[in-house]
Image (cartoon, one colour):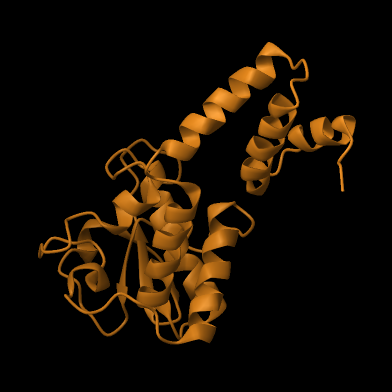
Length: 195
């Protein structure tokens, strides 16, 4: 079935980030048919093609986030899984951490004792085996990544299991306990509102 050109152009203008691949494909179809397209569309195609070639693709970012949810919070209530995912996203937005999801999850290295998330450097297999839990982790990752669910941690950057007495906990302000994790954020600085 042939899709009308105006409909194709309307699809290109949709704002949903999930349709970026679709936008690229539609632009390529329009270009292949040798239709006149605007300079903006050509620029969008070039930018989109460059974005596709970047190593840290959206799919890889979602995979890293889902793996972290799966290994850090599998078996937790939904809110607890969302909270763990938000810590990763909060870190990705904080200049003290890598500015992308996989960098945050893998910070410290696979063979390092300085990794941020224990599953990443425990030298065990990182392939999910509980498929229902894996599907839920992917759903949570997708919703948190695209901002479809609020942050229950109130901006937390750190957490630990409730049965652990983390040596660093006194450096930060406790945010909330959700499921089996205690979440922390920076302590307010003097002069900050609410300090």
